[in-house]
Image (cartoon, rainbow over all chains, first blue to last red; front, side, top):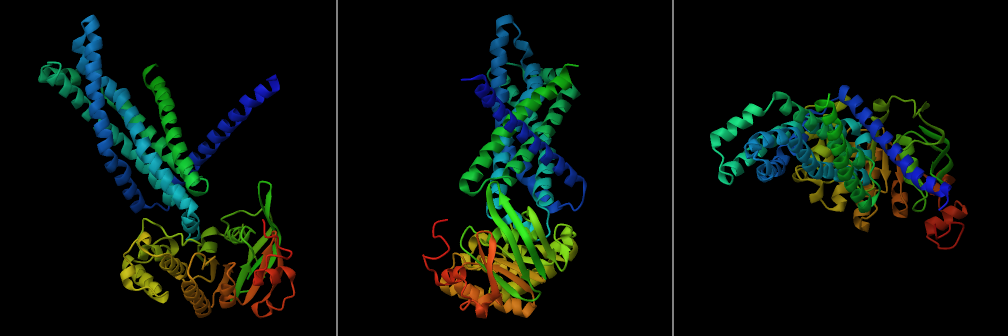
Length: 260
Length: 248
């Protein structure tokens, strides 16, 4: 392979990636612009809050419960190597609220919500429902995108908060029933070692992840290709894009929050 | 009056509209005919601004559609989409009253529902349909609901995109008659896209033949059969041989 061909092989995907990032950034800017200007569709926002927040609660709660339990077992068995079994409650709590709660909650919401938004808007696009909205003097960005993005940005931190509490309870349940911790001591250690910013940083991450999930779902849905294949591709791209962006944003936010 | 002058639109290397010149007089029913994939729907979407044309001008009563105030411009239009394009998540009456419950024309919910039921009755659907969801309706009923939605705000101009595609001949006849009645009754300007010749004869005052991105012929429907234009002649008689290639 000649150097020119190698450069081309690297250059083309790199340009496509940068172009895609640019398009998503413009879409995000347009969404924020519409968010600040009326009209606002309160009924749509309420419906999305219910869909994204309330109906995601079981999946986020179950994920947190099992993660908290598994974390307690891992820390106990790892800590036993240097006689540090007692740190289980505090590490479970810090691990859940800082990292696992927001990240796993965000990823579960990405799987459930980004796919559903992309499929719904993609189908609306291929069946001309989005064109119909425009002809009915209704801006699709305001009617479809803004309520979803706002609802996800507000609902995911709440989900993360609830998930944190359930995850800590999962750790407590395993600690008390399997690892012979005293219940009161476990809870006291959890509360004593947890700081407000540990919880606050996780909630801020949750808001960022909610924004990413809804934005990517809407972007791919609104730009879906034709037919079932186009909608399928949009759905896949939304979930993959949102998941990768959540992990990248998590690293960046962790750098900002905890290394300075 | 809607006037198109040298309108061009390409998608990548595919030049769909190659210089369309057409005038749709106020209060007239213009039907655009042409084979599948000849740019009829793109032409209609260019007028509405759903697709941006690359060159040429489109004016509505002398105002360029690109500079017109968007909400006021769209408020003058109603449109029946090919597949109905009804909103799945809303009930039938909410679809019909969509425009009446938002924006400048906003009315109280009860009044909007009342108007929606009246418009449904106008297209031959009873009030029992109002609370159903679009997925619970047959194709013909969905088209009628789409028609009711298009006329709900009593627009000056109504576009019909393939209004009879996918319907049986009897339902096609019903839809054609409804369109004609409504257009005459409302005194609206109508533009219909179709390749169904029975629709053309039932709906049109004027006919325009679009082929290879340009208007090949335009004239009153009464002169269509005797147009002596080879494109129109081949199309209306459904001949496989002629200037229009069967393989596109």
